[in-house]
Image 1 (cartoon, one colour):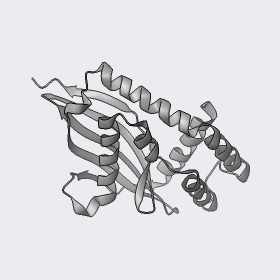
Image 2 (tube, rainbow, N blue to C red):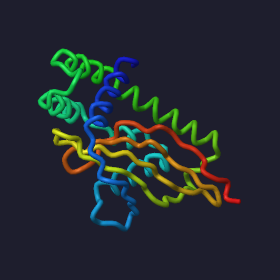
Image 3 (cartoon, rainbow, N blue to C red):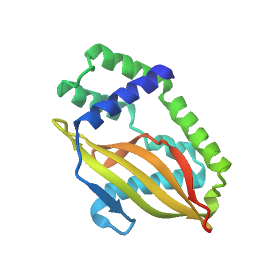
Length: 184
């Protein structure tokens, strides 16, 4: 599992180093021009609300999408990425990805429970994000946070990282959840 995580970190670091910041954007569910970002935020939030690891797994790239992304990075001569590294990353992914993503989701649900999030009462508020085009790559990298409340208490799903793949964003990682205030 450790080698799979290292490979994922390599991809994110390549994209972040090549990102050209376009400025912070605020997205609410009513903004139609940002449908891909809206769909990502809604899907993440719904996976948490339903406690569905199946919905969570669907947020991540398929093996084919992951391989296509690696090919784009390789074609752009990304530092540290070789054919051998790509083959190793794909082998690790095929063995470990589902388990890693499921474990991550379980950990995030436990974290949410420990800070008192009651998902059945959670109400989406907004999605703050920055979407940046990676220089010399045909990939867009997104980093953002989902803000929501349960009753009077406010929370954030922070450190959402995703990569645009075709008609949608695919999740790469989520840093965690935290309480912002207690509603007083």
